[in-house]
Length: 101
Length: 497
Image (cartoon, rainbow over all chains, first blue to last red; front, side):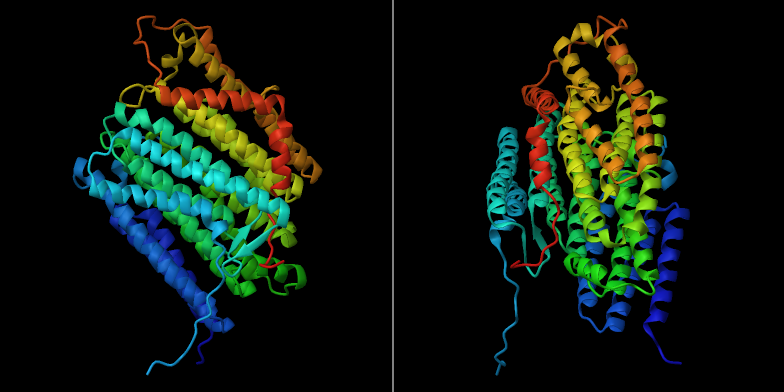
C-alpha cells in the first residue's frame, strides 16, 4: 500500500473529531485541555500532510507557530484552573454553575 | 569552515509596524519595570498605558497621511497589509484600550486589586488585535487572534475574590480554545486547497482559477466561519457571551465588547468580504442565516433578562448581528458601514459599561433592575449619559447609533439581501423595547431614596463624558466619521504595487 496525503488527512480528521467530542463530553478540566491539545495536533498533522502533498515548505513552518500557541494556551488554562482549585477542591466543569447559561 | 550562505530575509517596513510596537513593547516594558521597582503608583501605570496607546494612535494617524499619498502596500513578505482599513481599526482598538484602562484605574483601587497586570494584559491583547487588523496572512492572523484571546482569558478571570470572575475566565478559555482550533483547521484546509496561507495569493488564486473539486476550500471556509463567528459572539456560537460578560470585571467587559469585537470583525471583513470575495456565493447564504439568527435571538433573549449586565451582553450579540450585515454585503459600502458601526459602537459600549462600573458598587455585582430604579433623581447627570447610550444603542436619530444601523441595513439592501435587512429592522424594534425598559425604571419608578450616594470617579467620568460627546457628535455630523470609513477599505495588495 502506498501512503498518500489522503490517509494523513483522514487520520487527522479522525483525531480532530475525537478531540472535539472529548471536549464536549468530559467534565474534568485537565482532560478538556488534553482534548484541545489533541485537536491542535490533529491540525498540525493536516498541515504537514498537505505540505508534503503540495511539496511546499509553508505548511511545515506553520506547525512551529501552532506548537508555540498550544504551549502558551496550556499555560494560561492551567493558571486559571489553579486559581479555581485554590477556592474549591476537586473542581470539575459541573461546579462552574454560578453563572446561568 | 562555515559555508558562505546568505539567508534571504524579507524587507521590514518598521514605520508600518510602529502602532503594534508602541503597544506591545509598552506593555512588556512596564511589566519589566514592576519587577525592578515594586509598588509603582497606580497613576503611573495607567498613564503609561495611555501613553503607549496614544503613541499607537498618533503613529496610525501619521500613517494615514502616507496611505492617502502612496496608497496601500504590504511588508514582511506580504504578510502585513498596510491600508486604510488596518489604520482605521488600529485607532478604534487603541481607543478601546485607552477607555478600558481609564475605567479600570479606579475600579482596581475600589476592588483592592491594585497592580500592573490588568493594564499589561490590556496592552498585549490590544497588540494582538492590531496584528489581526494588519494581517494579510492567515497564520499571522491566527497568531494575532491567539495573542488577543490568551490575554483576554486571563482578564476575564482577573477578579481574585469573585468566583464568578474565575468561572467566566474558565468558560471563556475552554470555549475560546475550542473555537480557535476550528479556525486553525479551516486555515489548514484552505492551505490545502490553494497551496498558500497568504490572503493576497489566495485572492489571486480564487480570481483566476475555477476549482473543480472545491471540497477542501468549502470545508475550510465553513470551519473558519465557525471560529470567527465565535469570537464576535454570533448565534449559534454565542452561548459564552452572557456568562462571561456577567462574570468578568466590568472594565474588561467594556474592552471585550469593543476591542475584541472590532478585531474579530477585522478578520471577517478582511478574510471573507475581501479575500474570499470571488466565492461570495458559497459563504453568503451561511452568513445570512447566522446574521438573522444573531439579530433575532440576541434581541429576543435580551428582553427576558433580569440582570442589566447580562441584558447588555445579549444586546451586544444583536449588535454583532447588525455588523454582520455589513460583512455579508461583501461590498465596499458594506465594509464602510461595518467600520462606521464598529467605531461608533466602541464609544457607546465603553460609556455604557463605564456607567455600569460606577453602579456596580463595591464587589462589582449590583446589576439588578432594582439598582436602576429612581436613578434619574439620585444621579441626574449619570442617568442622562446612560440615557444617551441606551437611545443610541436603540438607534434613535441624532445619535451615532442611528446612522450605524442605517448604514449596515442600506448596505444589505444594496447587496440584495432583502430578507436579512427586514429581519434586522424587526430586531431593531424588539431591541428598542429593551432599552426603553431600563429608561422607564430609571426615570419613572421610585427607588430607594436612602440608597448609598455613588461618587463618580474622575477617570470614569472622563470616559463617560467623552463617549456622550462622540455619540452625539457622530449622530449630528456622521459625515466626519463616514468620510474616513469610506476611505478605509481593505485592499489586498502585494508589496511594491
